[in-house]
Image 1 (cartoon, rainbow, N blue to C red):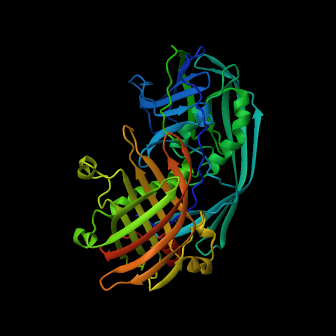
Image 2 (cartoon, helix red, strand yellow):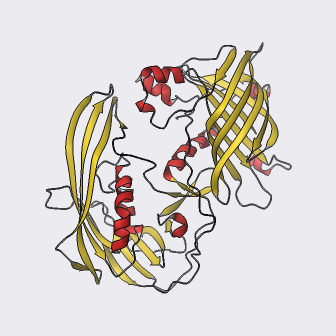
Image 3 (cartoon, one colour):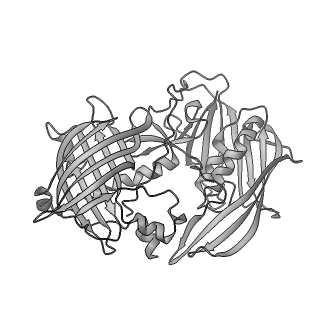
Length: 470
């Protein structure tokens, strides 16, 4: 489990007004895509499309699609991207994207004990008219070829270049230019890790999609695609629509959940593991500890709870302040007068064991930690990284409000040793994301004092430790 690597969350907030997807559509259509993975024969993707709305489900070929509970949605509120309901302490709508990826970014690869890095650069894209117009599912389509070219470079774990080569693709697309665009064609390739490129570990495919999307939107509806590397006579992966027809207008209601991008979801998802660190803790030791915390800003409150600390074999130190001690337990949720506020505040300092008495700075771990030098990483390991989750239950609300805080804008941690435990104070300004009806940026000031017992056994290895000890 990876714990304790705070990072700045880039929040893509939802528009203040959602597009109204409940208006009956006058041009509703349905169609079906095969699974582009040639080894999957019985799985299909069914699409309902009408007036800027796309709903998509994956199901066995012999079964009818259930559009009343689609897996993916797209409309104006999602920026035309297919979003999916996932859990991040509460339901959220997650949309795919490149997450700020830029060509030339080094991406880490691990195969067993071998660590290396790849980078793709000098990208060129060009969509040209082809000569193989044909009908697909009874619809006239025009043939296009998407030319992609870029350089791929591989580096060893010391940063030395070990290989460089030019890569090129010629993807064939068939577009019905009398029908409106939908992002549906991209999702099956995204699922199998073949969105325009053959490397399933890179964000390059999402970046390419962002580059070519405006031109494809202007052309029309993609009803067929063949994934090909340049020079190959046969396609490796093939997608083609079938069972095309007009459909009865239906309500395409987008769930009223906050919308976030994939990068933000990836950053706040590890916070769900923080609560799991508490359960194995020694309850007697936790019961003899305490912390008092006051926070204000987008959320505010004064709470008391437990404080536990621990280390692992690498010397990674973790201090966990929590209320209640068993987050989300059935007993805690059902208990009369149960707290309407729950919080987990995790502080970590890699590789130096239990901290000595003194005052410590806090820091954020950069997104691309692999780009830092050994000296920069060692300097970073002297500081504390912080992550926090605040959950506020509101009366009659179906889901709680969540504050997922992954960035410490400023602050300090002061440590003193008690006779039986670890004592100290914390002053922090934390930034992150608030998840309620919408998604928005959040900033909270935290002041806390603690008296912690050693009762935390399952301390995960920090990213800094993993890089420095590989």
